[in-house]
Length: 301
Image (cartoon, rainbow, N blue to C red; front, top):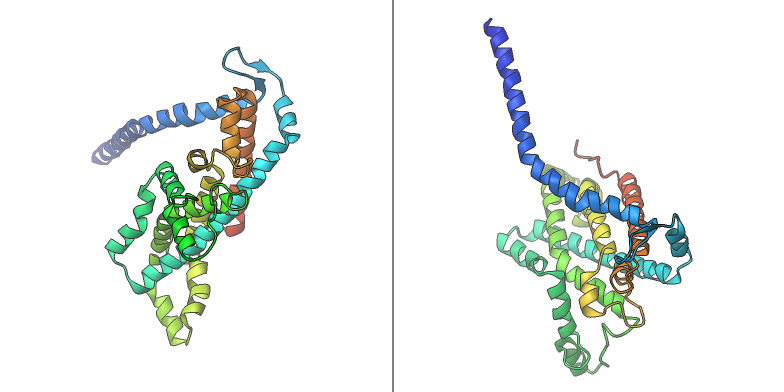
């Protein structure tokens, strides 16, 4: 009898824990369903319709996707977005990795980590406006300094050649500290004995970086790359407050094109099709990158 009673008590305890778990996760599930799942399903449905808010959605099948395949502005905006993503992710990852290694090797000061993270606390909109002032062709401090050094002033946000690199570097400035701290945390998980053994064998810092740090940092580095690529493809706010997609559509990234299609032209069906295309692109990139980098595996075992 005591054994049976104990077993029944354990089962009742598990049921109680299960109910408590459901109570805690229900708000998150409701938020996920209302703000993510339903809008996604609704957007997929609208991508097969002609919808302008004023009249009921009219089913048009694959017409929006056929239009998208023959839309030169869509392909130009996709190319512009890819250019931005390559610059942003490439520069940001390299700089963040350098900062993370320097923090691990030279100092582990909490104050320094806070200073590195400070730009991330600034919103994209504020960062865009501040850098728009700093790099203003006539009155910006940055361009005044360039002029004082004897060089011609550069229209960073007003030049078709410079606008995407400038937007990418502004984003790098804001996010590199956060990315560096993620990589720094990954470096902290690597046992110090591996570096000590490598030093005994005569390995220098450069060799230890490529032979120890990078291979063992692969899961964290893969996560950082996936997050950075997804975030870069969704760039909108910094472009909206600085260039609005100009000059001459040189910064008309895909999210900007989707926004203008929906809220300037009120073509919500076609804008939904563009959004679904972006979702598919991000899904494919994430899947391929996850498989190629073996993000779910670690060499520390």
